[in-house]
Image 1: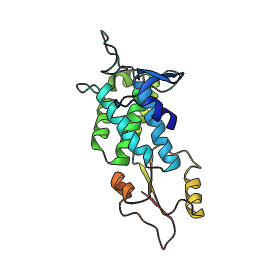
Image 2: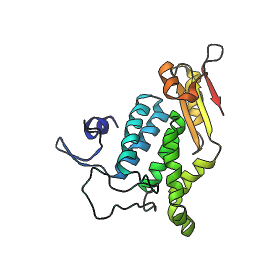
Image 3: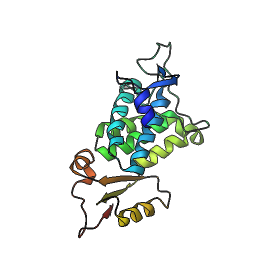
Image 4: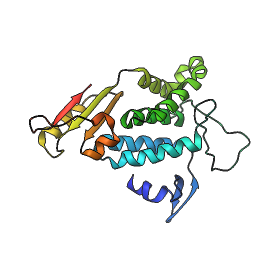
Length: 217
């Protein structure tokens, strides 16, 4: 991820698609942005390093600017900065892997809850609704979008850690969290004041009697 951010995120603030022999080129497509965004959020959940949330916000903002359909919702496959085409397509059906639209929506929903950014949530929700007729006609082809819809309407599990990560108690709690598959969850570490400012759910969550704690909601 560090390599991709260093070599594929251009100084102009866009994600590039190809790297070869020290040269990067070709503006990224929606799938590049969506899957890299999902990866950054997953990295935060695994490492609890706020750096990945900061970078994820830059990537999400650019993804919305480049690919989002303001009129109808959903994301085009190609960006505004890419080569001009006669028609800009929006593919939301899953193939061998979930569609880029599905991953973009799921990632924005999670990032929106993590950061309190209502624009991310509204963008994702409008996008889900924009594909409603397609989903109703053939739901099996849109399991990625259905996963996003489930995340959107479910009562999420919020997990907020507090205290030093190197403490054995903290490590035990973190290991226990990842024993079971729970897709609709938000994971946060209230590391310091910076984390509290960027991740509103962390506000007021602190250690208990000097030992690490976890808050479940």
